[in-house]
Length: 348
Image (cartoon, rainbow, N blue to C red; front, side, top):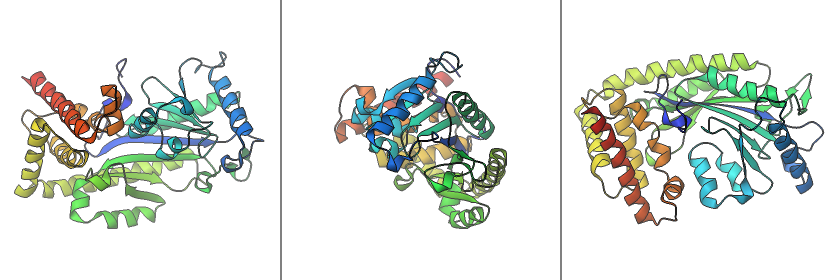
């Protein structure tokens, strides 16, 4: 990855369907109450221990993670982190005693004093479960040299959330599934995945028409991290094949083609672009790009950062001030037009 660019500014493998990959590893410090029983002194002690570990010069991660004390962030800054997927909405909701350690490209983070004492997250564009898993495991191994994690020989790593008990590892992929969604097949696909210990549910922006879904493992107890990753990767590829097959039928209709080219026209020309309209047009344009429907259209690398950049808090951070809804709509339209115009000029 180029210096200064974020991980989500790249498309990655199988990006026509798989937007990104995330692996979370939950850990709690031995001898310390779980999050719901922690007092202010406990949160302070956990935070101090983690920050000391992250800065330990004996470890290879020393100086590589930027620390943000959540209490010191503005609401806009905190929400922008959630919009970019660096922190969860639940983590930023209560900021007292919490901190986020993050790499420069935001592909690796450690959330401190959230639902668990530590939540290590590794993110990668496209399909890269192995890369994300190795990165999260490497960070956990380094921190375990100076931090003692709660562990039971029978149950594995002890966690606040029973769903994380065992390996403490939770893997997830964000999928763009417009064809399966519009064909009505998603319910059947989700039911089949559920029987295999996987969960398919709506992702960010789904309610606004983004047609993004999250596929994740539900079982962490009694299986290894390697087994969980293998199962999720295998089944995700099956979903990819089903989506690609459904797209051939969907995109063969003139109605779908019209939606895609209209969406491109809106995003290239709109002066006012409300978030919901952007989400719907973005989903259609992304589908058209994936299906190579444009002779000279945007690439997946151009589409990749657009979703995060168009979110309200990130718009305001870029603008350097609070924006009204109307101002957001205008600024969003300007940013999207600039991204698409830059791609077109590049292709001339």
